[in-house]
Image (cartoon, rainbow, N blue to C red; front, side, top):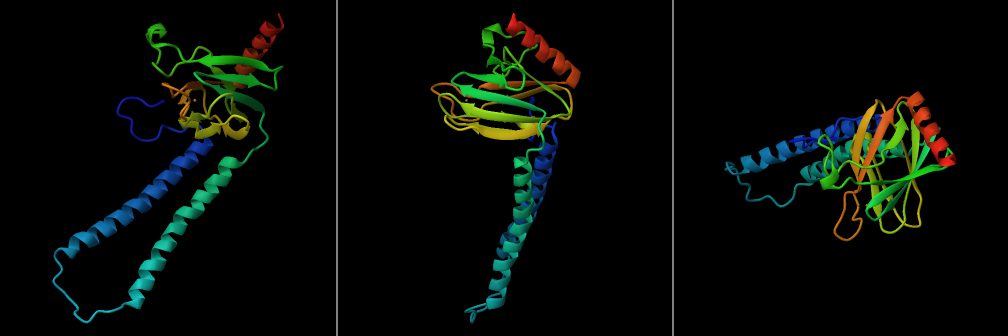
Length: 232
Ligand code: CUA
């Protein structure tokens, strides 16, 4: 999660987020080079004394300054397309998680495991623990296995929501009447925080999402204990 004075991207915890950061840095480098070049040219114009009174046209320079930016843009466009298709690729998921956005909370379903389902509400500020994070912690966390391909299906029951986890590079809108899909792979164990990034509803937004990433055997233990409790 991001902490104080953290203005950049969060550290990646998935291969897709790693690629997104590489692309961000690549695009930023091109942007800086263009800004420096144009800034230098504009600055130097103030000190230019040369004037050509008979200048009416310059076909060559106009060809150059039209085609050159187009070529530079291709260096952004092709990596961007590569990333777009990479994000859309589904690679034999071993777990599917369905997340449904409601006003004020998310609800989750593990459809592969006898439909284990629960709601996940934000912990109110007056009930938060001393080591808890205000507006970010939830009462029921999602538990997912690390080092596994995970598919998420996102939808909403009332208004548009967006299931967003910055460290995993996931951002999918949940829209009533639609089922959206994406996938990710968590590199390491830990807690991953996210917030809804759509408008949600009147006077609220940022419905929190917490993923608890655990080794696969811990996940099996967790899911089977929930199976048993729902059967009792
Ligand atoms: Cu749900 Cu913003």
